[in-house]
Image 1: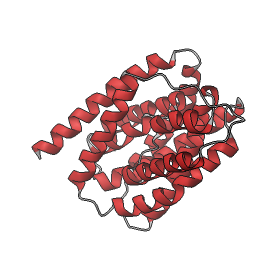
Image 2: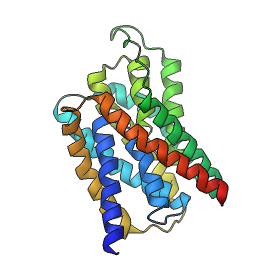
Image 3: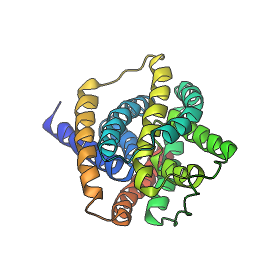
Image 4: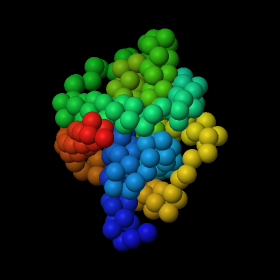
Length: 254
C-alpha cells in the first residue's frame, strides 16, 4: 500500500468515526463512496466492507455512550429486532443488483442524509415514556431501517435517531447511543448473509480504515460535548451532498 492510499484510508476512516461517534449516524454513508472512488472497491465489495467498518465503529461509539448511561438497552434491542430479518434479506439481494443501480441508490440516500443534516427539522417532543408505544409504527420503522442497512451497507443512524425519539419515546440525550445499538445489530445481520456470497475484500485497506474510524468514534463522542450538534450536522451534511452529486455524475457519465 502506498503512503497516499494509506493517508486517504486513514483520513476517510477518521471522518466516518467522527460522524458516528458524534451524531450517531451519517458517517457510514461516507464510508462506501470513500471505498469505491479513491480506494477502488466495486460497489458490492464496498457495501460489504462498509458493514464491517460500521459494526466496529458503531460498537466503539456504543461503548462510549454506555459509559455515560446514555443508552436505552431494552428499547434499542426491540427496535433493532424488527430490522434483523429485513437487513438479512436485503443484504442477500444486494449482491445480485447491478453496480450502477447500487451506485444511484446510494447517491440518493446520501442526498437525503445531506438534506436532513443541512436543514434539520425540529424533532417532535418525545412521547411520554409511560405512554403506550405505537408498536406497528415502531416495528415498521425498525424494519425499514434494517432493509436500508442490508441493501446499501449503511447504518442509517440519521433515520434511527428521529425514529427513536418519535416512536419509542427515547430522549435526545440517549437517542444517539441507542441508535448505535440498532446500527450494530442490523449491520451484523446484513453482514452475515453477505459473507455467505464470496467477495474479494482488500483487508490491507479495510483494516487501517476501520482502525482510524474506531479512533475517530471516541473523538466524535468528545467533540459532541464541545460543539453544537447543529454545527456538526452542517459540516457533515455539506460533505455528504458533495459526495452524492459526485456519485450521480460518475454514474451518468459511465
